Length: 174
Image 1: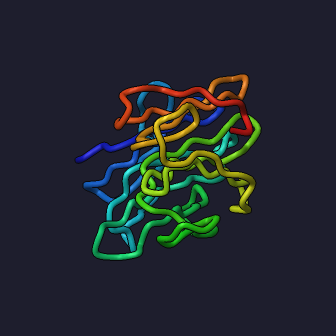
Image 2 (image 1 turned 90 degrees about the vertical axis):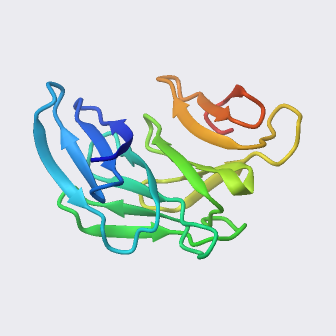
Image 3 (image 1 turned 180 degrees about the vertical axis):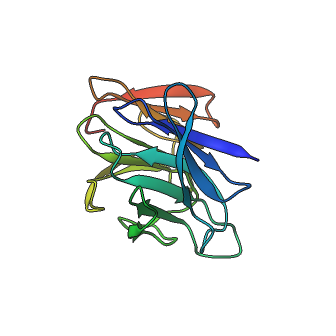
């Protein structure tokens, strides 16, 4: 109905966040439907999806809105059970201010583009905080409006910034 974001696991499954249907739909490499995860409970504005390399944890990012503090990341099992939540809104580790994108590295680090806090936060696959990098500013390593994030097979982190109209590349630790 309204596909908003996608992610892939190591088996080639494609995870599509449909923010109109409030679910993550999973397809095989041929495009054949496999299963879905309903996310209709407690989501204000789901905007991104990420998946662990083995497909055993699916992360849905809720950017919330300005009227609430419901800025979060929710981890689900493939059968739709909630594993844990990160958030809500705030500047501290594990809290977010308009999270907009996520990815999981090959070695299993969940990276969240925490746009309103001008940073990237990294967590293990159980939700434990690992590191953060970035700050507001105009020099290298700073962000204005980080909007998207990706990694390559070597673990380098690519962050697209809509404010600077650029992509910055970081080491696997930021």
